Image 1 (tube, one colour):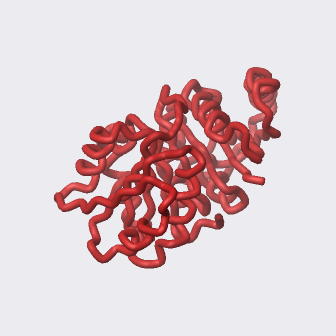
Image 2 (cartoon, rainbow, N blue to C red; image 1 turned 90 degrees about the vertical axis):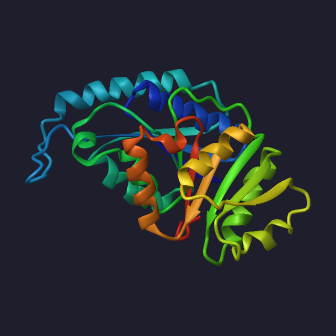
Length: 263
């Protein structure tokens, strides 16, 4: 059974991410956990948690109950929920090794943690131990006609390509593979999938982000998948996209694979 973790801050954005995840895996063998992680207050210099949370936890339980009431009975999934005291990013990164996927909205409430450390969803996407699916605000699941995969595998791509092609086959998608390396093994691997419409395109410009965005527009893509061995690559991309209002995936979901993902 697939295990999917979806954090929520009860915002519209996080509720939309929950709905997207449920729609994406409709009629599959999937179990969801919806989690809210809270930290009532902390000192940035000495960040020990200050437990003033007794009144707060009651409000959070009411919020979670209301959220689950909206969901229950509308899906055939097993859905559990939890509320945990901690730091959002640290908790999600720790939990990610026990899940097959984390689904997150790309923006949420302007919490103190966000102001101090930047986008939690971006940092989780860069460092999680499982794939992370980032859902832009207001994006609804309406199928997967065209999937774009940017490959920076640098060898040993086969495992990730297999996962992506299985994903594409599930939704009868066209898979468009982009790479900047003419020796990338995806050229050979792509020819193995005769039952899937696969194309491979070389990127030759100076800006990865610009070229990928252009290809997204050209193909009217429904999903962008990215995979790389280099954590520094993710930090570079994420830092750039933060300053551009998350320009890389502002219109379509972004699925992030890492080469050391558990599954």
